[in-house]
Length: 132
Ligand SMILES: [Zn+2]
Image (cartoon, rainbow, N blue to C red; front, side, top):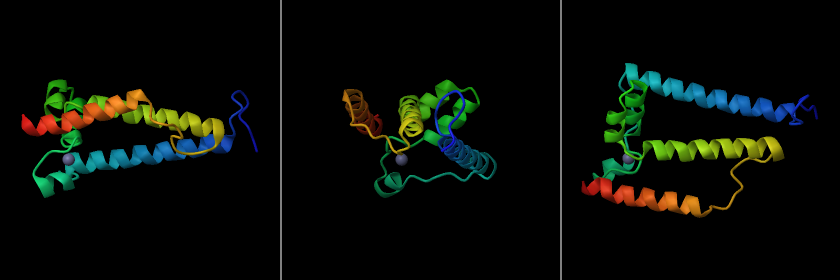
């Protein structure tokens, strides 16, 4: 197995990570182009069935607001977008580092207190956003 000169991480793992990130970027870019040019977005199944908003409802509109520099509009669309993106970003970085070190995919970590607090806040947000 070939290893990188400076890091000791096998090159195959680095190449796989780059391919995965490129695929994610291409999918996000394609979704962005669909949403902004054809006005096609993902309809929330939970909202369609219940009429209530889920924690993710408004995320696409919130991201588009951020891309336009409209932070107030983003918070109005989905107040929890930034914490949700932070959590997803942390999970992506953690799993990437874990994969580069061990060669095993996934998070491979037990949820800690912070994850339970985040989940509790998300559940409270889910209820509150449907009451206000
Ligand atoms: Zn939803």
